[in-house]
Length: 199
Image (cartoon, rainbow, N blue to C red; front, side, top):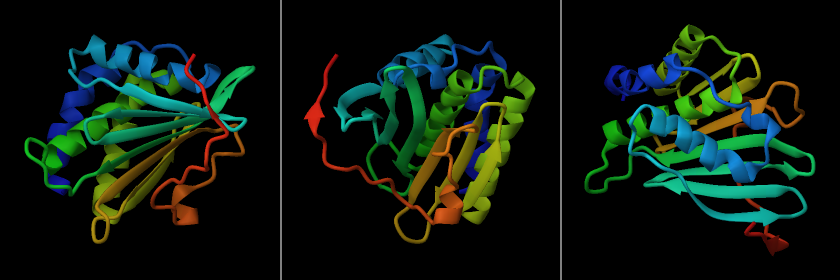
């Protein structure tokens, strides 16, 4: 998997060196897909997130997906706030047109676009380096964790068992920013919804 990194990071270099967008932590989970898709669109990427559903229980959790990447976004609407973003992908799943190289590249693009909207004050050069360090370490060691200006980024890759890559993004000033590595979390769980919301 390590040899995939240079190509994957290259695909996000223009995205991460461009201007940052609005601070995602200051909006509700419903807006995540719109902001990330705008970041992806600016660099000509064909990857797009689609909102599958949103649950209110009473906090809000929205599920977005693109190909084999799933993103769960948690937060609230009053006041608007995003408190946790979980990006999940099976890097080892064997499907036509989507091997490990394509999956890693897609995950790096998704994380890069998320960085642009959750860490708008992070210098572009630092964004590129942070992304490269996170992906390098998780592919080499199975886990990585680092911080930007606004957010904590925690990655776990279970290559031997499930093949799942889990990326958790949380605001630094939030109590929800507990370490994915420390907790040994491999895949996020969701509670049963109380009701569905489609604003």
